[in-house]
Length: 211
Image 1 (cartoon, rainbow, N blue to C red):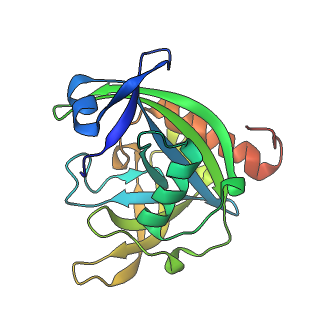
Image 2 (cartoon, rainbow, N blue to C red):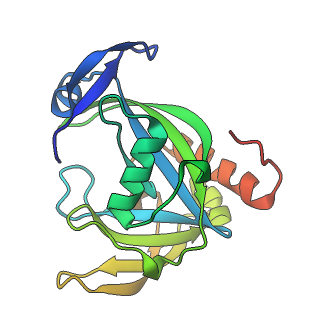
């Protein structure tokens, strides 16, 4: 995990100054991280974290996410992270704000205190067209949004997802998996259900005013 200078805040999101990302995670300093959930039709994209990641390797995660650098705006960071992680070029106008999520969790490796501006992105790109960032991303999958609502709403124990996974030789192969809640990074079931329910409303056209 590369270190970088980031802005830090108090618990009410008042700016306090800057610190290195490693210090923020060591001391539990509040900072900002971009979250983006990408949908294609009625499917949501899920990123498979690299097997060599220090935190939550080989678990399914947000489509694209990353920290905001010092002085960086959320959409600027988002465009950069989406391009770096999966090779997708997007504009600020394509990012639809959902909400800002407060993430507070302690792990053996770090203390996470993050304000997470969370966005939706619609795309017509195919998973096979994406370029996964080595060491960071081992695969990109897609799942039915309605299936994800059922999973995190405890209406089913598992769902089927399909996508592309990079092999040790660098070649990506098409894969199908059956996954459960335990297959995901533990951001909290309430977080996932909130996200997937918002995406479902968006997909169904019932609530276009999600910003």
